[in-house]
Each structure stands twice: as structure tokens, then as C-alpha cells.
Length: 190
Ligand SMILES: NC(=O)c1ccc[n+]([C@@H]2O[C@H](COP(=O)([O-])OP(=O)(O)OC[C@H]3O[C@@H](n4cnc5c(N)ncnc54)[C@H](OP(=O)(O)O)[C@@H]3O)[C@@H](O)[C@H]2O)c1
Image (cartoon, rainbow, N blue to C red; front, side):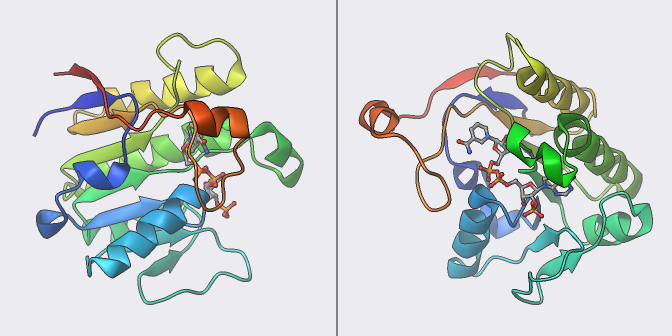
């Protein structure tokens, strides 16, 4: 399977559901919830990671544990063949304990290390960010580092560099809505 970086597309569109069993990391986020819903509608088998916090209980597909729990992570990934890494944070969540180092970089490292251990994962999908290829500032540097970890994993991958998402869970200014592109553009493939 080839690896690529995609500028603006739906993660759903690169997953061939018939042969894919994704482990969705970041499943409680805005993109994650959309993906979980879509997978449910399409009756796709998947597992969804949930942080061990009170409140989230959706279905048998949820796997609630700390990603640093290697045993639990290996057990979940062993049952899947694709990692969909949607985890990330933003500066305003730093007060709750999230950092770019832990959320964007650290979780990507944990997922890649587990994927390499269990050997069932043959593709990693990473949501990065537009401009991660020219990183300026802590957020983009974290995204660039997460990309590097995935690229060097020796596991085939697809990296998305979205600009902004529009839809449930994402408040987007009317300016962005007016100028949002609907096209998909493949910028690099190897
Ligand atoms: N939104 C955009 O317009 C946009 C644009 C460009 C790139 N992106 C990137 O696309 C990805 C998905 O975006 P989104 O809008 O869906 O993000 P989101 O709504 O902020 O969701 C973030 C997800 O990451 C999880 N998470 C954060 N830190 C974690 C940690 N240390 N351990 C485990 N889980 C953790 C959150 O879990 P909890 O629910 O438990 O907090 C949540 O499920 C992110 O990487 C983001 O940087 C987003």
C-alpha cells in the first residue's frame, strides 16, 4: 500500500471499509464523532479509543484506557488493521493538562510503537495540519513531529493536512465558510 500526504479530504474517503478495521484514536473529538457515526451507518467494524474519564459511554466499540497503557493499547490494535490518529489539542485546553507534546506528539508515538509491536496494522492515517510542511510555531512544529514519527514508522501511511473542518463540533467563521474549498488535492504520493 502506498503512502501519501493529502491536503484537504475526508479521512473516510481513503478507507476501503470492506477490508479495513480501524482503531479510531480521538474518537470523542469533532472529527472522531463524525467518523464513528459514519462507520456505524456503513456497518463497519471498528474500535474507538476513549480517554478514561467519566461520561462517555457509546457502545461495544469503545475502548476506554490511557494510551500510555501499552498492554491495553496492544490488545486493541491487535484486533485492527488500521490506525486513524485524530488526536490533537489546542492551546485553550492546556489548562486541563493537555499539551502539544503529550496530545499531538506523544499519542502518535504511542500508537506507532504499539502498531510496530503488534504487527497487525498495515496503514496509519494521521490528521496533521495545513502548513505542517513549513512549521512555524509550537502547534505546527508538533504536527510536523507527529508526521515525522508516522513517516519513519515503516508502516504505510496517509497524512492529511487539513486547513479547517466545517460541521458539527466546529465553529467556523462565515469568512472561512464562504471560502472553504470542497475539492481534494493530492500533494505528494510515494
Ligand atoms: N478542527 C480543525 O479545523 C482542524 C484543522 C486542522 C487540523 N486539525 C487536526 O485534526 C485532528 C482532529 O481535530 P478535531 O477538531 O476533531 O479535534 P478535537 O475535537 O479537539 O478532538 C481532539 C480529540 O483528541 C483527544 N485527545 C486530546 N489529547 C489526548 C490525549 N492526551 N490522549 C488521548 N486523547 C486525547 C480528545 O479526547 P477528549 O474528548 O477526551 O478530550 C478528542 O477525542 C486534530 O489532530 C487537529 O489538530 C483540526
